[in-house]
Image 1 (tube, one colour):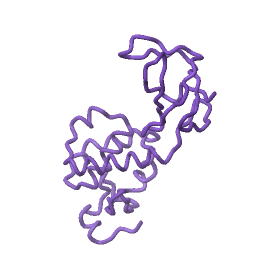
Image 2: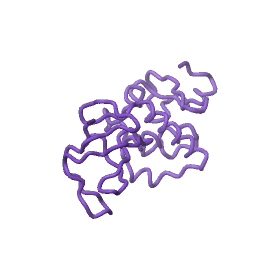
Image 3: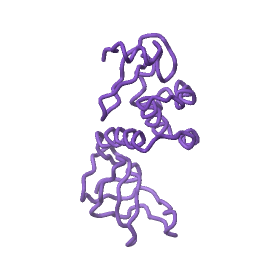
Length: 179
C-alpha cells in the first residue's frame, strides 16, 4: 500500500512502531479504513510477531502513541506476543479497544480450529482427549481417552467447549484428537 502525504507527515517519515526510516510502507488497520506507517522489518512479522519477538521490544515506546491506529496495532501485537505486563499498562479509549479487538477476532476466525494432528474440527464433532488434563476450578482431571461429544467451537481457534464428566469446560485443541 502506498503512503499518502498526510500519513507520511503524521509519522514524521518513520515507522510508527519501531522508528526505522528504511523501506516504509502503509499498513491498513482493519476493519477501519485507516493505516499506519511501518518498515519492512515490522511488515515481515506483523501477522506472526512471535517469529521475531526481540524486534517487538520497540512496542514499549510506541504503545504511548496518541494515534488510535497505532494504539490498535500495538494492542494486537502485544496480545499475540502474550505481553500481559505491557497490556496492563496500556490504556485505550473504549472505541479504540473495540477496534483493536475486532481485528484480533477477524484474524482468529480466519483460521480453522485444528486438533493435535492438524485435522479441522467442526461444530458438533466428537473428539478424544490425548493426555490427562487437570481441570482448574472443577476439582477433577479430564482423563486421556475420554470422548467429548457435540463440541462447540470458540472465537479463539485454539480452543473448543465441551462436556467432560457432566461439566462444561474449555479445552485446548492441541490436546484433542478427532474421533
